[in-house]
Image 1: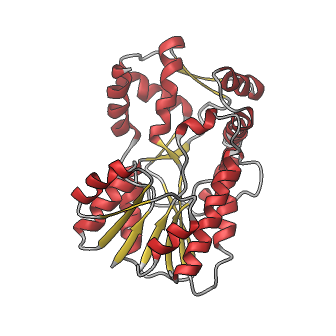
Image 2 (image 1 turned 180 degrees about the vertical axis):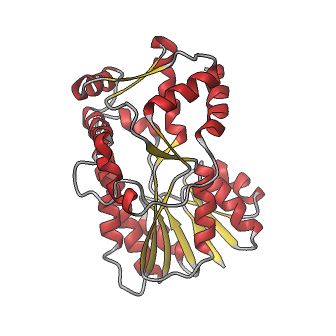
Length: 300
């Protein structure tokens, strides 16, 4: 099949592209960086250089393909840009995808959504996933869409490193012994590659998770991996957490979004739909990721 992969060669895009090429598919990878072209072609894929913000470019790139894999992202520095409404910008990319899918005639779509996409409000930074799912659901019924809803990515734990080094603690506005799911991008790529080759039937949702562990278990596992067995996870009040993010330069609106998102993890509110539709856990456990975490920790 002819497949378009958006998101360049990121944590999911690269292993997904490799898997699809190995399966014999013709893969076009969209990247905003021209310097990525050689790397994309080295994997046996076709490079399409352009941006998610350009609906016409997306339309032309999608034309003639069988399936498109869509995802939205911004540069990580965007969280610290006080002139950007991150949720609004990402939501607009969803509108661009809708336009491109409709105008290009694509009938099969796999969209990378997220945990929390079932929530109209109360999910903070994840609000754009709800908006985009609603936008894509406005496409004609003959467009089949698989919404992939991964849980929290393991690599988000790298954000814990500064306070681990300075205070020997992971600090957030939630914590305790209540288990929550986490996922490896490699497992996400594997599931998406699997779903691409399965039949498409209308609108479907699939959650993706690799392990279920509590904040205290995360601290224990990461602490053991880096040789700090006394590492603790500390839960602080919402406003203190938000103000800490603002103090390091984060856009106040974005900081509030992270505060609200983490707050929805308390009591499992964020995970209510996940709990009703629990997936089989994929293979990469937290102890596996902890080895990677330790390597990165020692380099910083």
